[in-house]
Length: 146
Length: 126
Image 1 (spheres, rainbow over the protein chains, first blue to last red):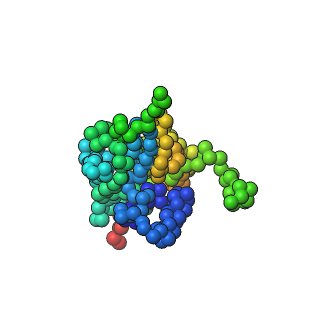
Image 2 (tube, each protein chain N blue to C red):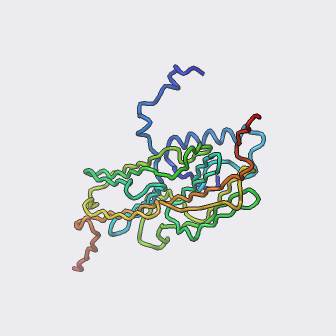
Image 3 (cartoon, helix red, strand yellow):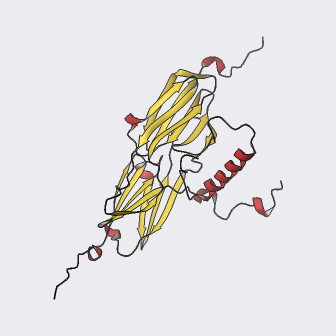
């Protein structure tokens, strides 16, 4: 992985990582964008019949600097998080250094029925919530029998 | 797979008590320790900072706005809670901890006690 894990010493996620690496080793055709999990920001994705909900856990960032793009069915979330670590010559000691810093970019492939013209994004409590509506035609419809 | 094997038996910890470990940065300078922690999704009123004796506990509950009927298909933040516990050393002044919490990022400043502040020792030349 290029990014450190978001929850480095969490046993569950460590086991998860191990399982992922095993899967990667055994899978014949892994995704061209690499592993689906891990990296910064961490992501949760949910579905409703009307929308796709994406949550990106990117704390402590000015929302104006987050770049959200939707192009050809691929949602990209990119930005940068400044490091809080003191410069090398400062008279300070870094005891633990786990938080992500630097540039980040994550992509999510959206389902075919996602409507690129009906996207909303909110940033609250350090979570970017992107909601993409599905096209009307794709929504399940009950067909009445005459 | 058999559900009754030891391997699949439920862990001792109840599911409601399991928590993710938030990543932290800890930096020490002459005046004290600064701790940064990432707790995305935790509103200010769901964050709890507790100093008990020499133990510092950071705990936060995740609260996300989800539309009705949402079905999770992929979850990296898989538990709705963060928790992390630190032992403070005795030269730190636990009564003077100050905290800032902004957009899921916590910054804690724990100053060193007055008597533990560094002092330059003059060397007398005989």
